[in-house]
Length: 470
Image (cartoon, rainbow, N blue to C red; front, side):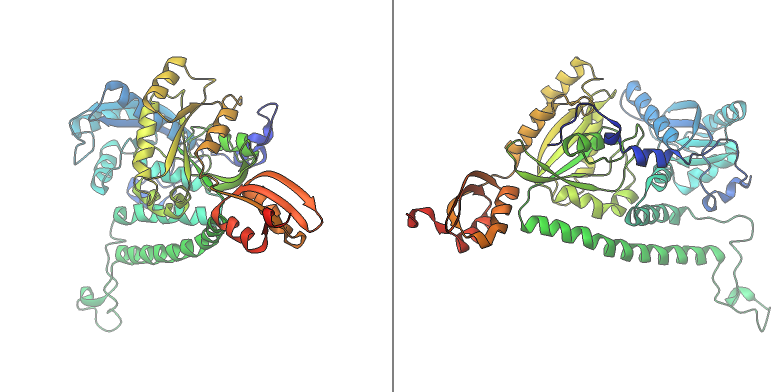
C-alpha cells in the first residue's frame, strides 16, 4: 500500500488536469448557422442554456435532484446554466415532450434569458426534438446527447475515442434529417423521369446516402474496437492464468473512484470535480496489509439513465467489472440521494455478463463532507459496507484489511525445498502468495508458504518435501 502524508498534487493527476484545463470553451464566440433544422450536422453549441425536465414519478425532491444533476452535466460540458423548469405530467408529451402550452412558456423564458440552447432531462424522439425546436426557435438537445458530448470531450485513448464515436453515430442515425430540398432530392433512377441520358443514377436520396455511410463507419469502428480490446483481454487472461486476484472499482460518476485508486496504489490518475472526468480503465497493482498481490481497476462512472449506446460501446471496458473477484462499489456519502446512486449503478451492473454473482463491498466515500446521519443510514441498509475518505485517508487501512479478507483464499500450504535455479518460483510465491517462512540451505531454499493451486502444482513438480531432506 502506498503511504501518503497528505492528499498531494500527484494524487489528482495534476499534469493531466492542467492539460485538460488548457483548452476550454469560451461562451459567446460561436459562429454557427442560425437555421436550427441543421442541428444534427453541427457541433454541439453549449453556451447559455435553459434546462427543462418532466416530473412523472417520485417526490418533488427526486425531480429537483434529477434537474440538479442535469445542471452539473451541462456545466461539465462547458455551459452557462441560466434557468431550470420542471413540468408535472403523468408521462412526457409525445409531440413536444412538455406539452404545447408549456413549450410556448419555455419559448418566452428562452427569449427573456437570451439562451441559445434548451437541454431536456430525458431522451427525446426525433419528432419531439423537431417540434420543440420549431416552437422555442433555438437548438434543443436531450440528456443523452449531452452525456455523449461530455464523453467526446474527455476521451483520450484511441479506444475511448472510437467507443464514443460509435455511441454518437448510434444516437445520430435515427435522428438524421435534412432541410429544404437538399437531402430529399434523388440523384437519378426512376425519379429522373424524362431527364433522359445522363439523368439516370442510383436513385438514392442524399439522406439515404448519409445513413449508409454512417452504418459503414459504425461497422468499421466495431471492428477497430474489437481489435483494440485484444491486448487488454490478453493481459487479463495472463493475470487469470497466474491467478492474481482482481478488484474492480465501480460507482456513480464523481463518487471518488479515481481518488480511491490513487489513495490505495499511488497511481496518479486524473482527479477532477466534474462528471465523467475519467473514461479509460486504469489497472494498477496493489498489496494487502499481509503483502498479497492483487490488481485494482478503475472503470467508467455511471449515471442515472446512462445512454444504452454508451453501455453497448463501452461493453469491452466494462468487462473489467465482470471478470473481477471483488467489486468496490463507491458511493458519494455527501450526495443528496446516495441510495439513488447505488440503484442506478446496480441497474447497469445487471447488464454486464458475470457481474451479478461477484462479491461486493459498498465503499461510502467522502466521509469528511457527509453528515453522520446519512453515513449511518447507508451503513444500516448496506450490510457489506465501509465508510472512508479518499481525500483524508480515513478508513483506508480498514478497507484494505476487508479486501484481504474477501479475496479468494490461498488454499494450498506448501513446505518444500526449492532448487536455487528456480528462484522464479520463490519470487512468484512472494508476489502471488503469502510466505510464512524461508530458509536458505546448501541445496536450495526451504519455502513455507500459502499459495493458489496453479503455483502449488508448479512448486510440487520441482521441489522436494522438507521431510525427505532430513
